Image 1 (cartoon, one colour):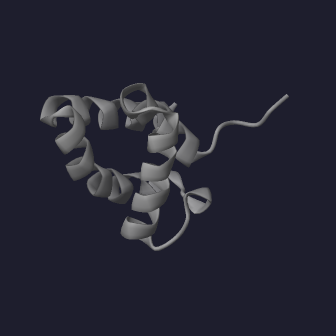
Image 2: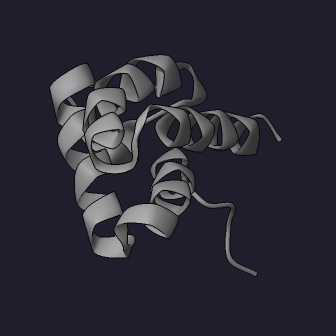
Length: 81
């Protein structure tokens, strides 16, 4: 049985619905390094606010303010469960 998805995978999966899987993975990797100074494989639940803050401007540009907030809220709920 495979393990639970990583934090980065959960966030990328939520973004992928709107940006595609490759772009979503690249965005999570890029903004993980930008916001936290380390790779997405090291993300913890506590890192979500900083990563979300870094992703927010890019998402707003691509999908609009309301949709970007919905995406990030849904990702946060996914991580809480």
